[in-house]
Image (cartoon, rainbow, N blue to C red):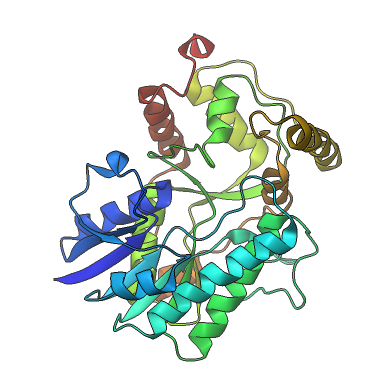
Length: 336
């Protein structure tokens, strides 16, 4: 059996990717984690543990020893606000460490978990992997700039002979979203604490499907290529209505124009920077993701990897709600 190492297995996508590795029955799972990582939330997995940190190149060299494949599901993601140059330096260094470790190891292939925001909006139909920015995105948010930089570096490395691919799940929902991350939309909608939502087109995918697609991209993908691990194309208004219907609430959040959402975000982020507290739901990253949404074409992954989503939008929402309920994220009174 081959050994597959996963960085970021404690996150939602990493956890589901790890489950896909085990469910295949063909691979042994190795979880690569920081020494300080809390592994309590992945005790449902059977794995070998190795210490490795994306900020420490030598630790990655050691962690990759004896592995056949390695998947980076823990790529840098801006959270608390920092100066943009600091954000880019962190992303550059961590990506370089991962690429170099793949290059200098004996792994057959590495995979980087990318972001759909690195793909420009298509002018004709759904977006696909062929779309690239010539000079970088006009969106100046740290999230957009960081994801563009990392995507570019990994694709360049693959084209230069390093066995590395990019797997890109779009808007992902599912279990094990302890942050929560994308699942904040569902939690705040059902708790009726969402200030509003921005309309537009999206592609949503169940995290279990995304994890399976990521594994296929790692095993079958061509170095230097991107693979969109898609689910279903859906309008944001329809998605919000489905969340409300399945979650059992009658009060649907209001739709907010993008310009107003940006203004509200700036005000709330200014208060956060000055006074602290909880990071606003409408933060810079949320606005960046909302403004970059589009329908996506998953035909490349279907043709080259044999990937197709299996879980419907309704089932995805139901599974996610059930998990959030079981973990106490949702106020049950809001569903009565």
